[in-house]
Structure formats: structure tokens, C-alpha cells
Length: 212
Image 1: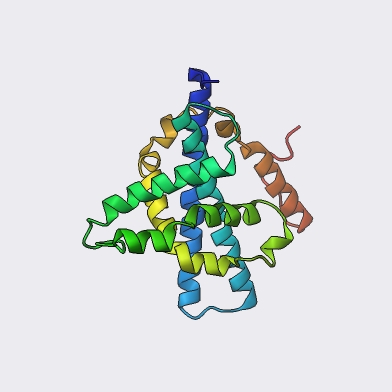
Image 2: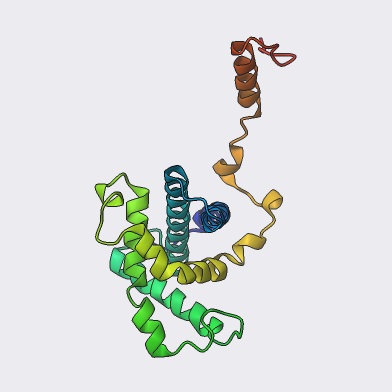
């Protein structure tokens, strides 16, 4: 069934939201990656950077799925094989652009080199997303640890992120209709929680709270 105009507006809000979450996750991971590169290697830091990378992979994959739904003009569930096929097309399009960019990692990359390196990317991308989205034991031990996925595909993930989210990153956040997403205004509840916390610590609460 084709997507109605109303549902398309809702899907666009979801796409815009996922692009923001994906950007946030990417920036958090980049900061953590820099920390590890600078010598941070405690167990806690390694676990946190693992979580940050998981979050980036998860949001980027979900963004891809929503894009595929919009391209297909259908909200039907996308089977794994179709998702992998469409993601590979997106990867190929991004690579064709970047292989002509002299400052790109993919500059002048041959067809043979590209397909030998990235033909399995969509499948491994989906598997990495599944391990991050669900509390599965594969997260702790799988056929492909997340560190291997990162090592093999980090440049492709960054390329895909840059090309797919570029337009969505430029939307006017304040003017976008976020529907229920934008109704999450918890100011009053948060103020009450801060007041209660201060009182618990034996400190003066916030003026005007609790509200009667």
C-alpha cells in the first residue's frame, strides 16, 4: 500500500529525528575514539566507546531502513535481502562520487578493490545493528566482534553517514513539525525533580516548588 501524504509527513519527521540521533551518536563516538587514540584504555572507557559505536551503527541502520521505505513508497516491513540490496546501492552511489574526490579515502579505488572490500558490508551492517538493538548473547560473543566490523568498515560507515544524512542535517529544526516527538516538553516535571533532589540533599528547594 502506498504511503499517504499524512504518513509521509510522519515518516519525514522520523527520518529527521534519526538523522539528529545519528549525528549525536557519531559525535559521541568520535570523541570517545579520540580519547582512546590519546591513550585512554581503561576497561570502562573501552566499554563506553563500544556502546557509542553501537549507538551510531544502530541509528545509521534505522535511518537507512526509513529511507528505503520512503523510496519504495511503502511502510511494509523490509526483508533482510531487500534491505541489503538497497544499502549496497547507496554504498555504490556514494563510492562513485568519492572515488573522484582527490582528498577522499576512496579516491581512485578500483572496482575490484571496492567490491572485494565492501560486497559483504550490507550483511555485516545488519548483523552489527541486530546485536546492538537487542540484548543478545551475540553482543558478547559472535562470529564477528564489533571491533572487527569497525576495523573493516569504519570508512564506509562514515561515507554512508555523510552522504545519506547530508540533506536531513540542513532542515530547520525549529520550523519542522515533529508531531509527538516535539511534544516531549518535560520542563515542569524536570523542575519538580530538581526541587525534590535538592530537598533530599537537605538544601533549599526551588522557589515556587512544589506547585500546589
